[in-house]
Length: 176
Image (cartoon, rainbow, N blue to C red; front, side, top):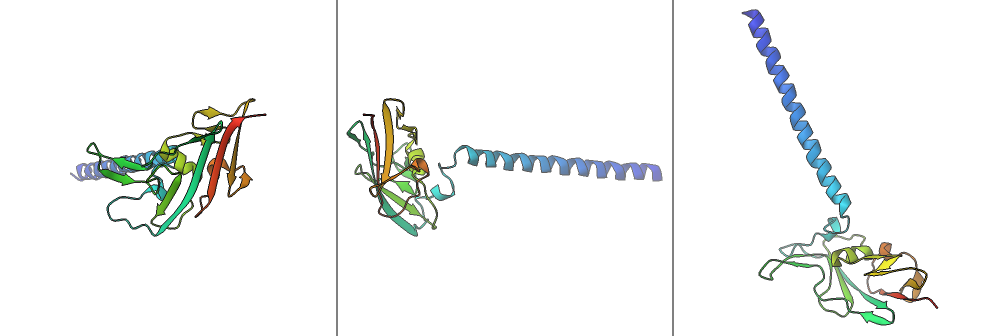
């Protein structure tokens, strides 16, 4: 009888340990997947990009102007970049970096003071932008890409820190 009792205790301990190992594995796998998802899309819906339409107050709100020129033709930056809508056209989510019109005036509205980069805007827009590419245009022997902030040439491209009232010009053109 005592031997049976000891076997039951050992079975209980063994099953308890197996349960703890399974739960720990599930927890670890779920957290690892969430971290990988964050790494895959660091700009889209990252911590700075959560700005729900319902109830989150924007404590930090500023604008910057963005002009993109491709071969001397100004590219229109569309209205409502950063607005996600449902099937009925109702806004369900508003990214903190967004446009209301097609003027090139970009709004940055966040619930906390945070660093936003120009690359965030292009990722939200769903367009390519780096030192080697703008939209569908790639730098090669015949084409160059230059960028200026408030008239000063910069080489930070997608890593450019957004600040209130800056004027950003991106020009893709043929080399001379």
